[in-house]
Image 1: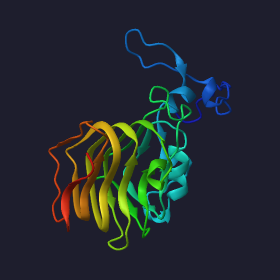
Image 2: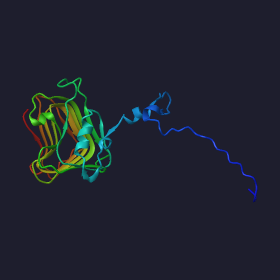
Image 3: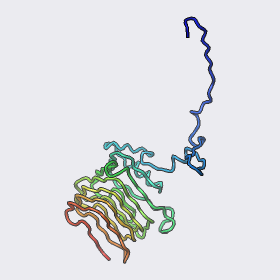
Image 4: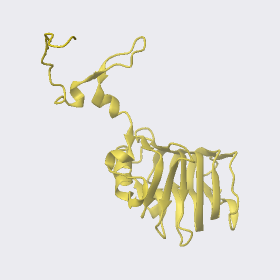
Length: 238
């Protein structure tokens, strides 16, 4: 405006929204037929290890955060990063106990083999294991799926990558497991159908140690087992 001209300033008070919690804010996907929900409900559709304090910086011990995440008995996401794990993460038995039809299926997935890395520094046990691997009798799980991440072992000791026992329809996709020279990339015991697809297990004493249950089938498709010291795949029992 010209010099000495009058200037009118108009102000208006806006309602404060910063004090609203996520369950008070609505969310709508926007597509045809979409229904309203809350921001809280939408955010809780995905559980991340970072929801429980995992840092993924390669230095911080993220073991307790991982255990807390899998204890939710829900689908768990591991975002891009390098996660230091110092001791075994045990998959808990679901509310159905030994009932195939009522236990929840475990599903742990990352952002990709080249983006999500788990660095295990323990000398024994497993990175992830069902309770059946510790000698618990007749513990049963309905499904376990692991996909899209890398596991780097400690390069010494007797540790193994994954220990899955008494599990129906166990599935492994796009995994890169290496550096377990005294153990196996994956140990499968008394499985009842399932498979491993497009995964690589490298620099382990055993690539995959499989002991099937009766005549149950287990599919190994498009997998690689380079530089395993003894066997790429060791089939035991039936």
